[in-house]
Image (cartoon, one colour):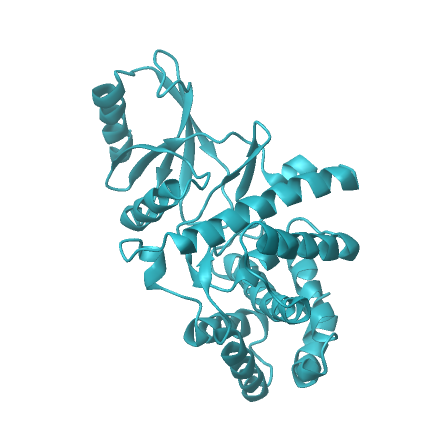
Length: 326
């Protein structure tokens, strides 16, 4: 038995009087954290027969942001106990948003993606309105330097033999433009595998990389998702829904044309980085599970580059590579 299991057994026994359980390792996404489902045989924890054990490399950050989001009434897991890197969390079940809509009709997509947008807006706007310096998410941001770091990573794994001078010039211009936008609390990785559907409610996972950033960043993560492809008509409808709820519920008005332009620029940043991460996992970590998602992810980039004359030089530089991959 490995050392953390012994400590986990002590937590269960000491805090909850539970001794009998089964442990199932869960298949995570592209994350360094490990997750296990613990099914309790002889006790319940706050009425639950199953809980989640997470092994986190940075539990202080995770707990800090979780507690802040819980105070904002964002639907993230309850933290039952913790001991160093061991976190005992509420179980949100097995049904991701990706699985909930797979093979379903347009009406089902509409229903659950609108729910996901409502939860996202609560995360972004209520999180920002309750801002305090104790929450570590507010000590870091998507600023020009962060955007450039994302671009550098993308170049390294996507296009190492390309004209880096042209790319960096264009990326610098985009990074400076995005950095001028207003900043809100962002989840950072709000996609269909980090969104659970339990009892018809949206539950949010993997929020520990939250930071200040653009409203559009999380929305692109949701609507330009590597794992679930939405048709363009539905994407347009959902952007309109987001803006409408932002205005009517949260009293924040965004000019639609500019919002969509920044949405597309942000999508380029996000999707380039996602595709680069998938290639990194294959090349460095020996994990090729995400390679099938590379063409779809880069196809978003390819389409967005054709929308604006300001992106012509970047389109010409990246175009050959994207044509070969997509």
